[in-house]
Amino acid sequence: MDSHLRRPRKRPRRCYHGPVIKKTRAKVHLADLSEDLLSVILSKLPIKDAMRTGILSSKWKHMWKGCSKLKFDGTTVCSSSSVFGGQEHTQKFIDNVNAVMQQHLCMVVEELVIRFGFDSRLMEHVNSWVGFAVSSRTESLALDLAPAKFRDDQYRFPVELLDYATLYRLRHLQLSFVSFELPHQFSGFPNLRTLDLHMLRVTRKDLQDMLSNCVNLEWFSMVRCHLNDELTVARPLSKLLYLRIVHCKITKIVLNAVKLKSFLFYGRLYPINLGCAPELEHAFLDFYSPVTLEHALTVLPRVLSNVQDLTLSALFPLKMPFPMETPWKFSQLKYLDLRLILNHEEAGNIISLASFLRAAPYIEKLELHFSVFDFAHRFSDPIKILPRCPYNYLKNLYITGFSGTTAQLELLVHVVENAHALEILTIKGANMFGGDLDHEGKIRFVSQFQELERRYLHGIISQNVKLCIN
Image (tube, rainbow, N blue to C red):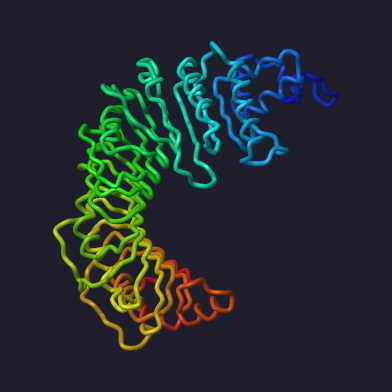
């Protein structure tokens, strides 16, 4: 394989009395590159492909052995001839991993990734692979052992194999489908930067002790880790920037993350305390259980008082009257994305969502995504006109799932007539079931909305506003 570089060459021309510089290409082969650069290139390849490069050149025969990043994935390490998940497939994976590790004995391996569905035949081998990581002074260790079908016997992570030097050296740790039990006088992972836990079986005390001893943690994720108890971290996580809690059975979260910038949460509604989090920029909340407007406007501004970008997805019972005043504000919020699932009974009170704008005085972009099954509240005259309330910073309003109900129109008219700085208004239609419109439905929707615009928005919407209807 050749790559080409350009170099100048002087060549006289008849029509010109002086020398002319013409660019030509010099042939440079990959074999001409330095060993350090070749090692970097090979480290980007799957280990199976890196081994195959040995047939290209005698110089490369053992080059792949210098790769400091070993990633073993069951879908790539094993040949397609073995039945996926079968005994032959598992044994082939074990043999290939052991063969490569044998070639890397007494060498530094910066990153070790094992990605294979766990079964009992792997137990002793995974232990030996963890031992290999210890002896190879690995800084990044990933054991992704989640099986295709759930089973009860998770792999027990051998914490006792990690000596003090390894605990101090680890920067990145990923554990999937693993049980974890801390030994006595556990000193923690003092230099750990990222911790990714998936389907981890662990007690509340062990998890809290582990997190309390990760003083340099910057990125933390928990997915399907069921404590059935609260998670409280005693020591401040003063360097934590990213926090993700997804599908976990937890009753409460309490931690102090003063540098936190991103918070992602999927689960049931329960108490969450992140500390003051003055630098929080992004928050994504997807609640399974219903969230009342009162909770959203009193509790969330206290938990996320400084958030700048908030996405909130939930089933919203809209029972609070508009306007709803609260002393708590989203004082830094610029972008709000509401993904609303509304019951039939709540569809007539959509106007109460304007309370979010009152609680976020500096909002610049508002997205409303409606998912509502509604027959009873189709459009009818007259609509309610509410007292004026200026939204001085709102520039972009984006609405999807607009089916033309009276309540939706009331909210639209109220926001538009009070957003004097509005620059862009986008409305995407929906059918009476809340689904997307087909081609003919879009044509009818545009025509119907143009009539609503003429009757209700004419005179209150600036001609400078870019209006997008589809």
